[in-house]
Length: 389
Image 1 (cartoon, rainbow, N blue to C red):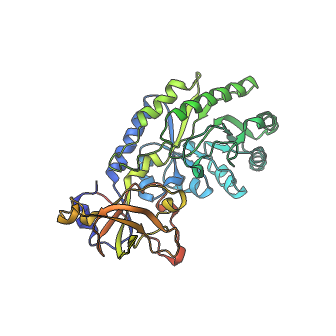
Image 2 (tube, one colour):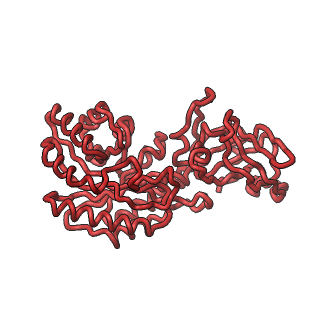
Image 3 (cartoon, rainbow, N blue to C red):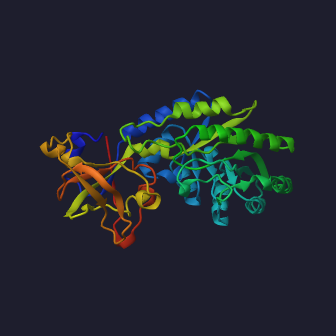
């Protein structure tokens, strides 16, 4: 819940902005670290979820590694103090420049997504007289039961190496003398809330590590990826279910002596820590629709427009926290932004207190894939961030 003190503080600030509750972030990181440590699991923070400097500085301070999907993310992770020995580099389209940057940095591992990529990393590592650690990202054909735009582990997805290609992978690995095979990597999608999905993933990981060992490869690392979801409908339920998430892997993953188990979590660590704070510019009342037109739009939070994603929307000025006597009066509004696109709509038919020009609006659970996906479309200014103490 956004407190009365913060609502009063927001009144004097220019909107829109991202508000980060650093205590919520701290509590979330504590919960994840404690839940993973009891099983000896390694967690890498997925930088793509949020690379706000204060956010990643706090995550680094908890000792997590970094999961990167671009050369600039690799650089940012190292610049912010992440141990290079805990940095992994994934992504289906790594450029030569990005690979060379990561080789020069001496990162822990490349998560490799094609046979051709294996050959390219081998060539570039050879030119530098070094060896690169690699894990093979396997497409396990496991349905994540999430939005089809954010599933990554099915045969029709562009990510990873398909199971039927593994014999060719084995041939390529033996031919690439500048590569050190570490293990296998999986990532089946994002915003996964059905933990049964991860049981299916464990079954496939067990099968795949047996395949590699049967073909003469020692599997040192099992990287299960991430994708753990959060409750967008209850933004004050701050902590994702890390305990049961990690317990699934403890119970169903066949971890052999000397193996390490790695995870790459992003959304679950940062989503609940931030809200997008906006103001009502105009109220348009019609015969069929009432509109709240905000000063924030798809340029500040594109998830609802891109994925039809739900975010809880609150009128802070009319909330009980603000002590407003009109809070009980409810009207349905389409909450929209100012962008010249019909898709620039946060949500339709939202039950809200009767709202007025100048009211403060919070779009909750915006800490993941909010600020990082912002754009300057319509020549919009990039907005700033406000942090709790």
